[in-house]
Every structure is written in C-alpha cells, then in structure tokens.
Length: 229
Image (cartoon, rainbow, N blue to C red; front, top):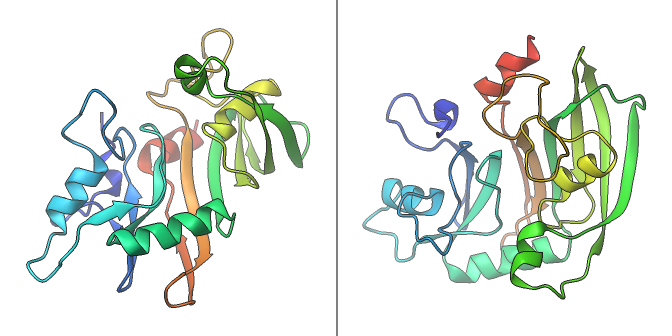
C-alpha cells in the first residue's frame, strides 16, 4: 500500500522537493516502484510523475537518475530529458553524491557511530547470475536515538551497492524493522508494514549548471508514529 504522506494534500500530486531547468527531485512515497519490473506494472513513480507533471511546452519526459526500493521513501532525482539523465547518472557512478538515510534497526546499538565494511551480494542478482561475485561495500552510521526495542540511525553510503543498507545491518545482527529478505527469524520488534528506511537527504553538484543541489525530505508519518512507541 502506498504511503500518502509524500503526496501534496491540495491536489494529490507527488511532492516536489526541488526543481530547476534540468532536474526535479521528488519525495517518493513508500510502497511504489520507481520503474516497472519484468511484470510490467502500470502504476509506478515514473508513470505517475510523467502524467502529473506533463506540460505541453515540455519536449521530453522525466527520467529517473537512480533507484529506491519499493518500500523505501524519500528523496529521488529525475532528469528533464535523456541528456541530463546521463550526466546525473555519471555523477552517481563517480560517487559525487552525498546521500543520507534514516533507518530503524532492531535492537539497541551499543556504539554511537560506526563504519560497516563488508562484501555484499544481493539475492536478486544471484538469482539471475549465479556467478555474480560479492562486492566490498562501506556504510557509515550515527545513532540518533535509542528506543527500548530499536535504534534510530542516520546512515551514509560511501558505496552504492544494491540493498547495501539492508544487507549490512543484517550482517552485523541489527536488521532493519520490517526486514524479511535478509533477516533471520521473524520481526517481533514493532508492527510495521514495510522496511523502516527513508532517503532523508541528498547533496550534489548539478552537472549542467555546476550549482550545488541540497535537498531534504521530512520523515514520513508511518515512521514518525513508531518513533513514539
């Protein structure tokens, strides 16, 4: 089910966090794919924003510059045209992006901050390519708040492997709340319908204008609610 907290209340549009002549940054609701899978889903973030923000004077469509999981909410960048998309995707590949997330992990982390440096191999990649090798990934975290049954952490990706945050915290014994794919055993921490992960901020240099882009997305309502548990 899609989380409606990232929708503009006045007109039910996906919330825009930033826009210039080349890029538009949205606040992605949880429960929504960015692009279709091989199942060819019709309702995706890509289809919705292209429909909602289409303009007669716009000669090209909006194109996603990176991905977020279906369950993950928060900051996502779209380009206004293929050329701008290629440029921004190169920035991502060259690690010219500073991305941060807020995650709720099971249990109480003892350290106030830390760095997880381990190899990861996404299960979906192995499903289609049995010879795919695990790749080294680096995740940094800082504790925001400790609850009785879980910890709220600010997470920074040094590398950008698929499902890196989910895999890394599961590897060290603190899987994300709502994690089923990479966690051992059932999650009895709190009742939550999705993985508790939110893309909270993004900083980069616009590859076209060379101006700095800084965007932040407020924590969605479903995550705010369990903060009070």
